[in-house]
Length: 216
Image (cartoon, rainbow, N blue to C red; front, side, top):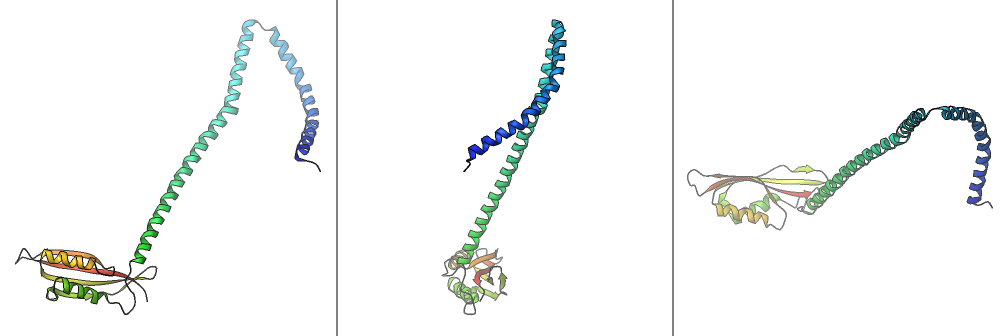
């Protein structure tokens, strides 16, 4: 069985056998011109030979620059540009990955911070009980449940609007703390506190309590 080394050696031998006649014919055609050029060069004076050598050197530099150096330099410049483009693309992908990870973490946090869904849960009852205990039922001027809002990923947002009248700053703090420490995740949105004209130590408060749950 022929090995790879033997196959390559045979291939080189065939290639040399094919090129050798071509090389001989080419040298046979070129040699007369080379001999003529050498003979003319030998007849030149010393100064003329120096000029020919300088011209040959300049021609060699021109050929080397245009056929070797310039293509390599262009390739390197293009390679640097492609590397910079790839690095920029990679940075963009890394930013997208980081954004995706953040959004996914936020979504997981939201999904784990939901109240029991279905007809058995009433944010209205939870909020009314909390504020009645923290500020007193008589301070609740109005409490109005809002329409449930459907969200992506099977989530629903419950909300209740409240208006408190004539409450102190301490009562406001207690009420917000009571909502914060409920056994279920209820948040405060759209909080607005306005000082009363009749008593500068009392306030009227408008706020919205919100909670997230899963669709039944």
